Length: 107
Image (tube, rainbow, N blue to C red; front, top):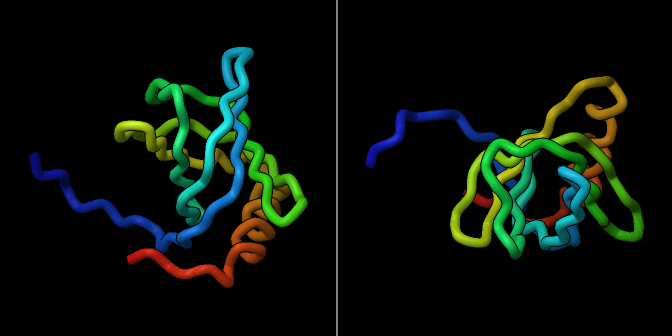
């Protein structure tokens, strides 16, 4: 299947713990790459596409929180889209990306 072209922000290859809280459950995974728009993480069990919740990203001893939704699923990898709802959310994501910015970009 050929998908229509859709711009995707550059991503940073990374590795840190991620917790996703949704529907009264906590799911713990490992982030594999990050962009200003979202992240990809390995989770088990898989989540359902479209669910919304709160992501907690644990980076270098700090916790960054932002609302997100499950955008896509591939095996045990989950793609999340960040839901930026306020200037504070924007600042959280800027801080997060700058903290992991020394890691390698994914083409």
